[in-house]
Image: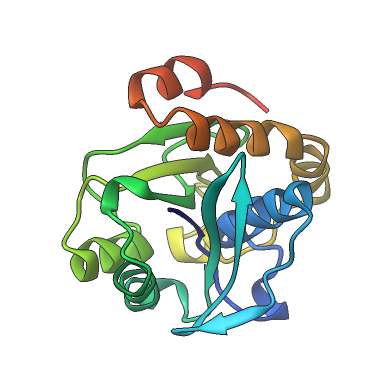
Length: 189
């Protein structure tokens, strides 16, 4: 079984913020798979489905970003999911807007949602799909990630849903990090 986690903050206020890139991409995937995240468990909204005969759970932790770890570890424990079968989708300020990157090692690089997940799961090798949101020198990091995408950025994200979905479905079929990095890392959407 695979667990795909989109990170973000719950509520209308945060819906279109850069910090909710994980939720936005997970919504694109659920639309492609024709499923809805309607079930609730362990402070998360989820759906259990199949993709090419493989069991898959799509999950949005409904705790705020910085407390995502409890929800993720609860799902991993309850469904007996190994760390190598988890994909975390999150915003990344160290990547320019419009780029994505798979990564499975390294630190949380100041991302508090990842820090909490790493601490609670005791795993540092979780596969991540980093969605570039860039930086803006006029904003503090917190203010930047909690600001809304502008119209042009949202247009690019919406017009490139297939790109994100393709990356995730490729991970489901072939979770070899080298193959994923060669195909997707630093690709522009």
